[in-house]
Image 1 (spheres, rainbow, N blue to C red):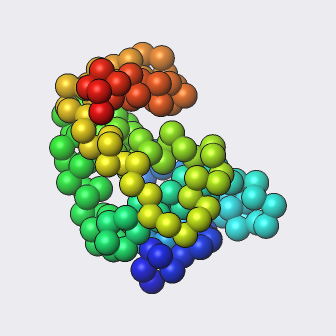
Image 2: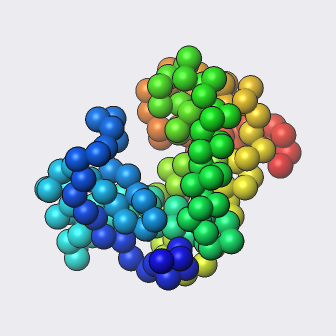
Image 3: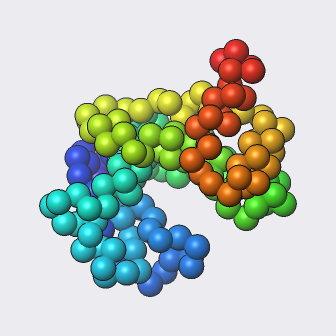
Length: 163
């Protein structure tokens, strides 16, 4: 199914998930190891709504990439490879500083951000961050040991670039 055809996300069980990941989305479906987590995600009371919001942002980003999962994952992989030098700072840095992940993490608590069935293009401005910018952000981010600062650190670097 094309990303534009997805309006809600459901979770399924998988055993093929790296230990450092609690969940992963593949083509509009969330895969988890934990049955308890799956039940929370699939419940109607939106208990795990931050994760659902984060993953729905990825669905809308895929819409922005010509409504194509192939383009979304190609962009994801290429960006990850470019970020690999950040692994010397922290093993999670290459992932957290992907443009699509920056947009998703910054906006995951805004449950209305990806609510409408429209493409999201916010990730494009984060593509402007250089590897040097990302090194500085990662160093500060992991020194503080929190993702809460991600938004302010990224926005500081973008403001310095006057983007």
